[in-house]
Image 1 (spheres, rainbow, N blue to C red):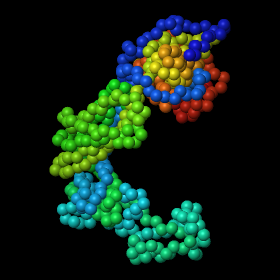
Image 2 (tube, helix red, strand yellow):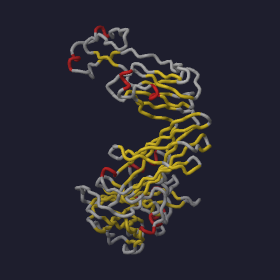
Image 3 (cartoon, helix red, strand yellow):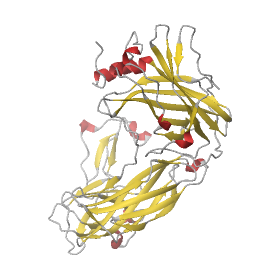
Image 4 (tube, rainbow, N blue to C red):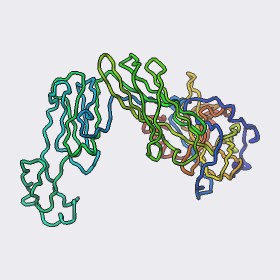
Length: 474
């Protein structure tokens, strides 16, 4: 455990002793917090680095600061589906906004070309696209040969061999050339089309493996939105997933909403069961109670909705995500900030001790942000600090050090607020604990002119100045 650096004989500190602690259990939660329900033992490999590492840097003081890090809804207007089989009905999908729509298709089997594919109106059988079947072409492969025997020779006079009439036939190739047929097609609705059922006509050799289809309808009025109740969850939480169906501002009720989870290792997880809560809202709950590495990380959410609105059938897909990080450590207390001054009375740094409890030996990173209050009462970013330190199982203390060079350029008077305390296990970069309000810790009063100004402008600060985020130094 690293002890807080003692001030030199020519310096002084202000603020209570490090013994005073504010327990994190009293922190008011804000959106984006990660609060362990309980600690669980996670099998980790302790990082080899043991020496503590400190960093602090200036932030953009002109930007208002927000405590909240809420999850953002992902809004979808498209449909995605794998279609396969010899039954023509397997390639039918609903179209509710054909104007400007596109249909992107490619074979599930990446070795199969796609020389022909078309869209037809199910009701009339009319071909809706004006796409042409593709004649195989050739490219010079001297730099990317398909097989070693193509490396010999040069293309004759730099010309391609003529394509045969049969699109499925082989082109007589000069040495160094290979035949290619596109494996992805983008079709548009080139004939006037009303909302209805559309079928994709595909070659017979594609049907066994299937076709991946994405229908993009940028002009549709029907949207599906997906969002988790939080960005990140800890062991014992229950993630609440909300799907919202709207036709412009009108909720769509009575639809069928489902989906499934994609686990962090990209394997398929359990299906999602949604229940309607009215007003176009559909909710599914996912209990989270595993410390297996298979489940630690980002969970993908794949949602699908089908139904009808205004007499038009629709199908929508949207992808969202949330993080799941069972914690083996947590922050249990935050010390009152200590201001260190040199013999001349100028501020050299502000230090905040963070008490950490861990079940296993590990190396941790603690990050925090200082903010100041502007004349209009809004909070603004001042500086950030981060410390990497190894701790043995049990309790230890990790100090955050905000250097004068990180605070001086904002030219903002204190006191300053400590915000966004985050504890991360560096074994696997697993977030353990996040407290946006940081138990409302406030520094002693500090005037901007009391902060020691550095002799040189750090490169990151100069970039902030160049970008207009910090006023130029005069």
